[in-house]
Image (cartoon, rainbow, N blue to C red):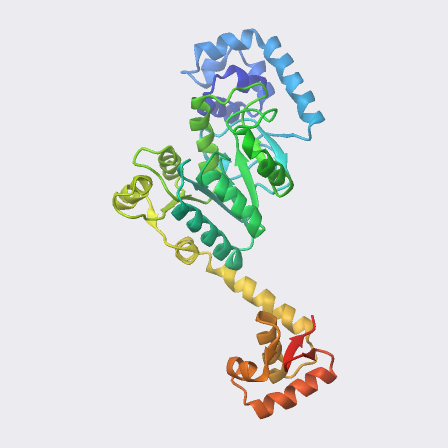
Length: 366
């Protein structure tokens, strides 16, 4: 924590020292010989190390705050630190995390875009999250908790049952924008809040740019939903490409202000075009997730109804997708003739699997 404070946001150089010497303590122990390790080490950093005591006292205060507010400090040598982020040369040496999500889930995406997102973008996010959830149930959704696309991505992720993490441009003693407090509280229970900044750090403009590298670096893929020609989300997309992450963008109508950035990204090969979750899953090669979901569902069906014949299981599977159907509709969806279905349903009633309702409807008993 003290070293991060003294490095004045030159994480790449600090990480080089950390990798070469093996620990933060070793950097301090060798503070008089750092140029032997890194010839272009910052003079300002060297001078700061001479007055280390003040930075250490500030770090101790931060540790106390963390302990009192269920905040977990993360360093690269810890398993909870985002492992994808460790691949980036300017990854933070310390992160502060409050939440419940595993930051190293099998799939991680970041979704970014304009703060002035339109109804079109909101519909895209809602549809994308719902579709993705059905085929890839284990995805961590990362964004920046800002207005517009960010907050919509977080809220739709929560709605769909995904865990979602917001990366902040300030310390965890505050929240900007404050009107997102309710969503942020829900995210702490179903995801989390993450930052590289200590408490009492203002949400300055430069901090938002710095946090974008964390948003991009901890994800497998970056999805730009909607952006103006010079939108801030384009910076995140550029950073993601620099980290060799996959970048995708939704196209918009030609001439629409908040579609220009996405359209230009696609035109200039800065992002792959997607129109829905199926496009994205195929491009990422994540079809195996859908196959696993299908296999699990079929396994559950077999476990729930172990004594059913093949025809009875066929009827049960139809009713599990759309319960309370009449015989004629069951006949259409199963392909079985009505006279045969009547006998099958009677046998299933005797086994306690279905029961009849008013109007000749059949109900699957779960």
